[in-house]
Amino acid sequence: MARWKTASVAAGAVLLLAAMKILPWGFGFAGGKYLYETVAGRHDDPARLTTAQVSEHLQNQDFQIFKAIKQEFPDDYDAVVQKITTVARSGGSREDVSDASRVSVADLRKKYAPLLLSAPERSAMEALGAQLDMLNHVMAKQPSATCNRYVREGPSAIEAPDQAFMMNLDRIGATLFHAFGAARNSGLPATAASDEDWSMLASALAKAGATQDEMKAIAEPNPESAELCPIFAKLYAAALSLQGEPGRHVKATLLYEIARN
Figure (cartoon, rainbow, N blue to C red):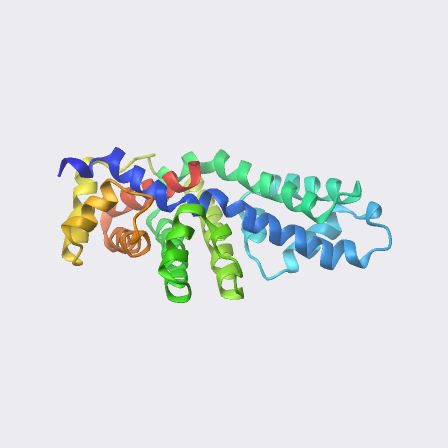
């Protein structure tokens, strides 16, 4: 199946991962809001905030992404906390703090994206599984038109995100940073999926009942399609079902395409 060569399938995957491109906004907003409501809001003089205080409160919130960054990349975490603290101490607004967090996380995501081609099976499975869980959540809770906007536009398509949505969003980010760390330490070669690997994915999709029209929609994605959510949910489920090195290559390549954009 010529249309299932690496370039076309990877391009299709990138369409779904518009959500990942906007992902740091979600975490930046959470970090900025949390900082102002639980740190700056409790100090008479925010200008006297310390990095230790900011870090303590970031680590005590329910979201896991900052904990993952600290665990996997402690020096980068310290730099992020320093940036947030500097903005808060200078009298920046909640939006300024949020933006500092968003930009910092986005920079780290792009910095470490190339590592993902060496991601071991377990971490790649967890990170891609988080993407599928989020998509399933949106499909279950939102009208199909909203779900398709989520695929195209990311979290901003959800007008009133519930707590489950935010926790799923956080899990996407946390598992991705854990995958960065696992890939860095794996010792595995950086290997993108081959044409044979993509052919195995196509076979897995067909075995799962994907129609020829759905297969074509994945290889040649149309942003205006009304069926983006179920189509790409099938793609992710099929990728997660693949075993061995071909499965690892496919998962790692999809994650790389997610993170580098």
